Amino acid sequence: MNKEKLFRILSISSLMVCITVWVPNIVFQISSPLWMLTFIIAPAGIVFASLIKNSWLIVSNIAMLFSFFILMFAGYFINYIIGGIP
Image (tube, rainbow, N blue to C red; front, side, top):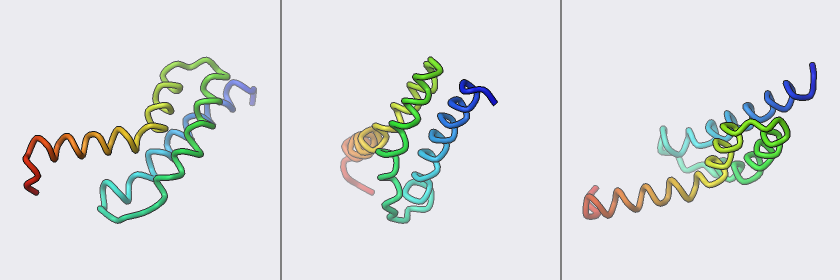
């Protein structure tokens, strides 16, 4: 297996792991600290994606790096729109 294919697999797998660690918090509403792994795994995915110069993998791993802030903003915005009524 050449390096480009290995880096692509590692970048895609880091993206999938970052998506998977959010499942307990978002889907099952279980407070799980696993989401903090996105701050460790996503930069590795960004590095692997930049080594193969794949822009969509770079952007998606960057989105996962900032996913906590994106989801926090979305939650506060929705709460603002509905007036704080659950």
